[in-house]
Image (tube, rainbow, N blue to C red; front, side, top):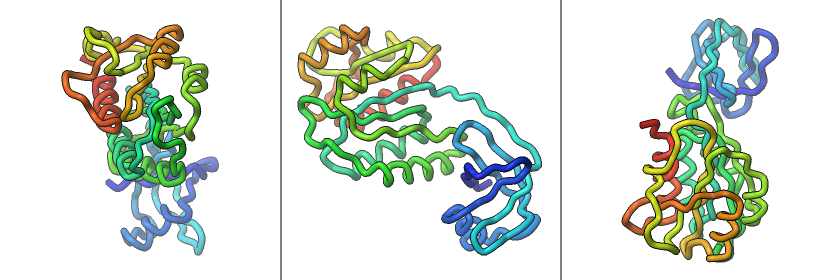
Length: 230
C-alpha cells in the first residue's frame, strides 16, 4: 500500500496537505472512505480512512497506529561531492537502507562547501515512503569538520580513510548494539591532522574494503555494514 507523510496530526485526525494531498486525491484517485497509510517520520505508521476532501487538505480518520522501533541509529558524516546528483543518489539509497542522521562536513580537502538542503530533504522523504520506512532522517547543512565531531554523542565512532595501512575492516570491529557514527571524507580523503583529531575524540580508524571507493559509494557501503546485525 502507498505510504503518505504528514506532521499535521490532531487528536484522532490526520491532514494531508500540498503535494501529499495532490498525490493522494489527484494522482492515485483516492476518495471518501478509501483506506490509506500515513507515516509521521518519527516511527509511527497510521492506518486511516479518508473522511473529507477539501480544496487545501484531505482529512483522515485514524483507525489504528503502530509504532516501529528503529534499528538504524546511525549518523553518517560525509563530505559533499562535486556533483550534486551523486549526493542526491547517495541520500536516496542510505534512507532506503536505514539511517538516523546525515551531516555534511567541510574538510581540508573538500571541493564543495554547500548542499541543496531543501532538495535533499525532498529526496529523503520520497525514499522513506518508497521503502515503506517509518523514520525520516535528520539532514544537516554543511559544517566544519571539528564542529561535527564536537556535537556527535554516538556510542560507537569510526573514521574510514586510506591514509594508513593495516587498519581493521569496519565489519570486523563494529558492535551490533548502540548508536553509531561514521566519518567519510572527500575524494582527496581526510588530512592527517583530521585523522589525528578524530582519534583524539575517540574515533576508531577503519577500512571499508580493499578497493578505493568514491565518496558517495563509501557512504552507502558504510551504512550497509553498520545496519547489518550479524
